Amino acid sequence: MTPLISAGALVSLVAATISLSACSSTSTAPPQTSLETGPQRGELSVMTPRRLVEALDRAGLPAPNPMDTTAFECKSTPCLQAIVTDTVRVKSFATTRQAQTYAADRGLFQVATIVVAFAPPLNPAQQRRYRAEIPELLHR
Image 1 (cartoon, rainbow, N blue to C red):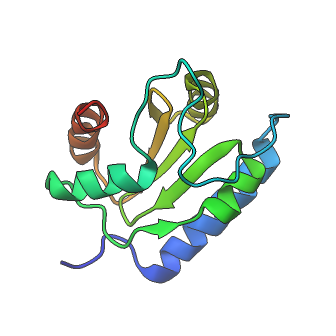
Image 2 (cartoon, rainbow, N blue to C red):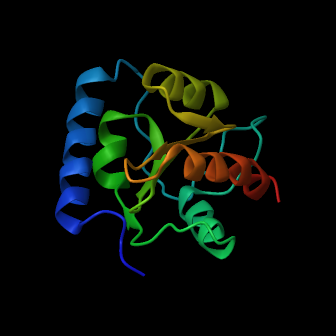
Image 3 (cartoon, one colour):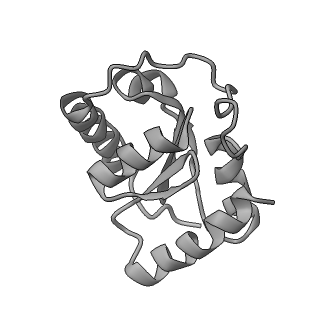
């Protein structure tokens, strides 16, 4: 399968997102450092971004070339884990409120403590497929 986005474009996209996140993040919460830290007590327990990417792939929704960008992205954003692929960027947060705030400020798709950004090559119909499947995968 041919990637939907070139490696060079992916690196540029990651760099641009990191720069924008650093400039626009106003959270005073300290970043979490553990990749497998789950949601805080009382929050809906959902899978990690890595597991969601794997589940998307198993469900027939491509998420090729996953790369853990937690060390870069979660320094400037209060996320727990960040995974970027050729089709989606998935971040998890300690609370639903943090995820909602992050997603709303950026116009991103959010379910519970998970926020998903779609790569430019995904057309609206493809994005709708991901949007329909992600909540199902998160609650299995």
